[in-house]
Amino acid sequence: MKRIALWLAIAAVSSGVTFLVCEQRHYASIAALQREAKQLEKAAFESRVTQRVSEQMEDIAFQQKSISDRQRELAERQSRIAEIERGKAETERGLALVAERRAVASAAQADSMRRVAERQTELARHNLAVAVEARAHADTLFFQSLGNSLAQSAITQIYKDIDLARLLAYASWHYTSTYAGNRDQQNVYTAVLHTSNSVERINTILKGNVRAIHIVTADSRKWAVGVTDCGELFCYGYEGQRIVHNIRGNLVRDMATTAGGRAAVLSADGGLLLCNYQNAVTQGEIIEAQNILPPGKWKRLLAVDDGRRLVAMSDNSIAWIDAATLQLRGIVPVDASLTAMGCENGSIHVFGKGGSHYIADKDGNVAQADLTAIEEDVTYYYYDAATRQHIVGQANGNVAIVGEGGKIARILTGHGGPVTHIAVVGSRLVTTSYDHSIRLCNLKNLDGIPSYFTSKFDKWPMTFAIDEKESVIWVGNEGGNVNKFCFSVFKNASATQALISREFTTAEWQFYIGDAVKYRTFGTTASKPLR
Image 1 (cartoon, one colour):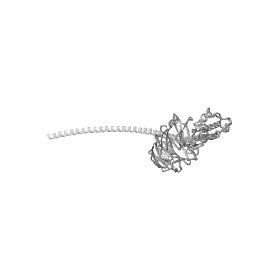
Image 2 (cartoon, one colour; image 1 turned 60 degrees about the horizontal axis):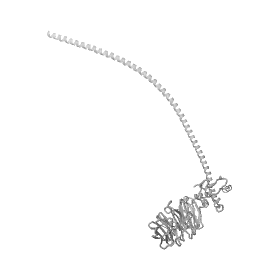
Image 3 (cartoon, helix red, strand yellow; image 1 turned 90 degrees about the horizontal axis):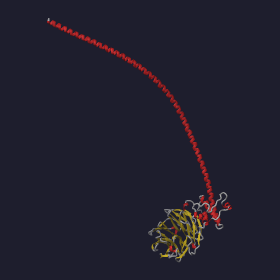
Image 4 (cartoon, helix red, strand yellow; image 1 turned 90 degrees about the vertical axis):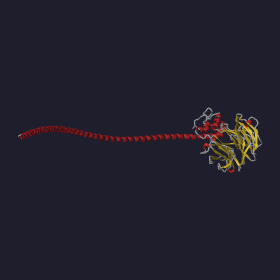
């Protein structure tokens, strides 16, 4: 019973437990169902919410679509408007390009027309300048021709009517100078030279031919000191003083001035005299030293090394001499018949028959050379340090100008006899010849036709000396004649003007110049001569 009771108790307990478990399960199932219901309700709520949200989102999407459609339509309208505007802009741009091209074309046309106008203006100016130049050239040629014509008329009047000759000479200078003519041309130069009293023939008692002249200063005055082949030492002052000393017999050939106011004189037989020309102008003792060189036909004498040494030339030798004592320092024979000698910066050039050429240095060494390749006999040699040219006078009257390297640059013809002396003063080449003439040639015009002035003498001009500062040339001739004249055409023109004593008459003006030129005066109260 107990067992049954136990079993019943157990069964009861199990039933209770089972009941409790089932109840709990029931409640759990109810709770689960409630939770599920809640979840379903929540899900349904969320679904409704989601649906609502979805519907709202759909509404929003429709609204956004509507907005997007409106924006798209607006964009399309704006695009169409922009396209229309772009089309308008393209049209306007095209019109602008057309206008620009038209403007460019118009500008180009205007520029072309401007250039044409400028060319026309320049052409007009050029034609005017050509016309003015042609007129000026015609006037220049007319007045240059007039100057030459007046000079010729002046020359013909010199020994007839000197007053008229001076008017004509100065007028010729005036028009030639004013209109850029050649003032050194023969007729103008001759006219003003011979109407200015510039030429002075010094009447002397000299017996021999004048062999050498030098310009020196003695007793604070300028003198022309020279020698004749009869052994006469003469001193002619610029103010007219004339002093003559007999220093030896005859056959004097040359003279060279040395340092200390001395002059060395060479004779054909080799005799040397040292004369004090300072004393010669004051009547003091003249001869200070003398010597005689070895036998030979002595011809030329040069002073070198600032007058401290002398170089003498015979027909076949060269000698070096102390200028203070006249002692022989050396002599070198030369196998040639020597004809001329000159100095180039201390080197001595010596020439012989047939154009043979030798150079001697400062130490007395002599070497054969070939400066000119001239076959004609050389009668005078001169070196122009300013242009570094060798100027060679020849027996046939020609003057050769030889540049560096021994090449002949120019042969000047015109002298009719052997050249006796050559020098350069400024731009003028001065030469004398046995044809009785002295010639002045402008070295600046040697590329074209040389411009000469030639003056004639009664006797052969043997030598000359130039005073560049005073523009004076002293010329020694055969027979003891000495001439002095001013070689400056400007100074001669000024001197001629100063001597004018009257003016042209109306008849003279019409005859010599003509009505085409306005009348003017030419005396010292008129305009001064142009340089």
